[in-house]
Length: 280
Image (cartoon, rainbow, N blue to C red):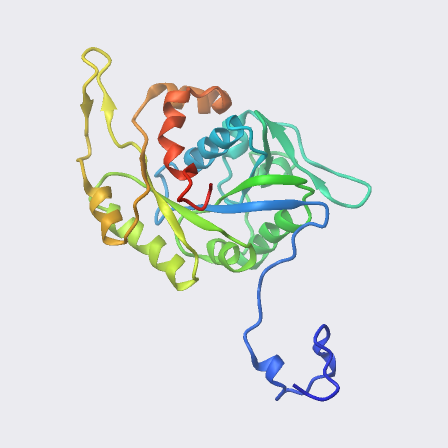
């Protein structure tokens, strides 16, 4: 370190200053009027596996436990969280220039659909612009005191997941998958990215895991059984939740009433709130 080096300001340092040459944190500062205790990313290796559904259900589950809960919808080009909750009012700013999130069923929500003049308009933005919006949702939204923030990310390992992994103080991620043969590849990509970024993987949610016959009550594993358990074991993951194929869930999301989901469905997520998990 140079003799006249000021730790808080590197402008006085030369190019060869060790402080400048060391690794620099890319974490974005949190909103000054917010205190967010746990930040959990919800990821998937491919689209169409129900990631936004799982994000919404986790948030509702936490809210029902009396926790102050929020969702940052980072799926900028394919936002669906407001639809699940039936939120149509646009977000607005306060006198400080902070964005005030919408609230429904005890869950605070910010999504690009709540910013666009018409929610049907496509978001045709390049990666850096999309990444910038995600950062704005983190540090320009007045979240207040939040116990759990769930970040709904787009599928894959592109700009937005990388931005979230680098810019937000993630306490861990939950991987969402489906029971088809592709499951191993889906989980593998997401887990490897998390490992490379030193982000803990809290567990796996298998969506569309089985179907319960309304007549006999028997579970039918339409896409096969046991694949997610093998993949989880390969990566040392002990937390696995399963969601059934259930028409009632589809009805609730279509009607914007995900907050009315039964406690029986939410019971699947208790595994993530146990004492030995980062969400506890």
